[in-house]
Length: 478
Image (cartoon, rainbow, N blue to C red; front, top):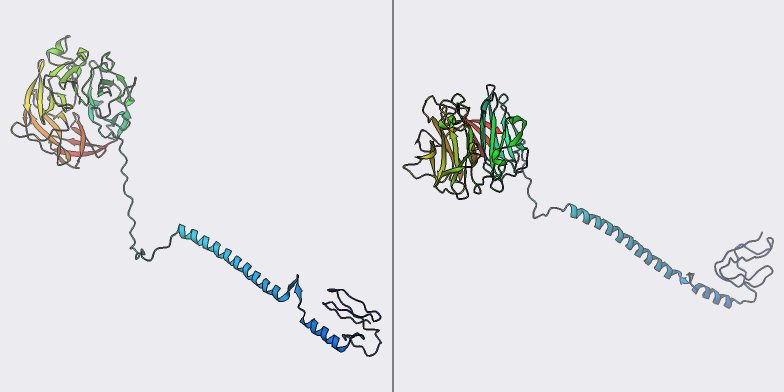
């Protein structure tokens, strides 16, 4: 058996039989002899016979002083470098981890900033949830829209129509169903293109044509963007189709001053007295719509379809531009219009803040006096309207009601004058079951209905025998 011991360092072994010189860093195997050779022990180093004890001591000392190396670097130095590198790597890794967490924390901080200790408020009391509030729909009305109203009877039922202008500058008629009392708005559709003036004054009338049975004709009057007078008519209001009237189709249309108000009524005659071509004129009736407007010279002009709308001067006076006006037939004994309006006509014109009454006397208009005879009138009215009350008298002048919108204390409220003939009371406000303020336009019809624009809506009132007691009927659909 051969016993061997490994060495990591280079040793020079003298040739003793089977001993060899082993290169450095190789495994040194020292063969100590035969297995049965006496005196040899495993792991015993055999000294060279040529070496003295001193030499062995020097080599041993030299060997003990020699240091081990790794890749040419002393082991201790290598270990120090390894430790430093390890610490640097750990520091880099720790820095990366801290940086990532810091960046993430920064994003969270930007998205949800922590409350400042200075701005921290104490807990607020819980506010109870309120029930949903009703939504007020945006109005479809043009801001400066005017109003017109008509009424007529058909089949024993009373019909109402209200005209207004919407934000698209279209003229709309809202019709009331006499059974359900609901309103249905529909645009005025005509057979040719027309362009009404934004804020045009609107005037309308209803009448039963001569020799017609259960037919009602509505006539509508407007001003165009060029201040021309326009006329449209229909005999089927629910169909929504209208036709151009003679006033619109004139080769040279009548023109008004810019912003002129309009007033119209149908001056009809009874068939029983219309026996000749001039009979209706003898009774001071025309069977024709009569239109009142203001000319560019600021005078008033009176026109009707009987004389092809050529027009005639109403008065020679000069009125303020945009003077308010109203006009109607005088028909005793009824609150609805019909062919039996065989009496005269009356007009109300604002002049210097006062309302002056004019009546037709044969072939001219006569001044019947002003409402405020003994006192200073209020500020000029923004609008006026006139209608009749049912009367049992046989006089030519039934009880009348004339309303005006006056500006008082920044609030527009209706004031009414009631009287017979030219005897008028001072303006007073009616008692309303629902108040209304900031009125910008109004209209009445012959069935004692009042319509006013307030806060972007059209409100309807009814007054019975007492013109100072108004009952609120609701809102007209627009």
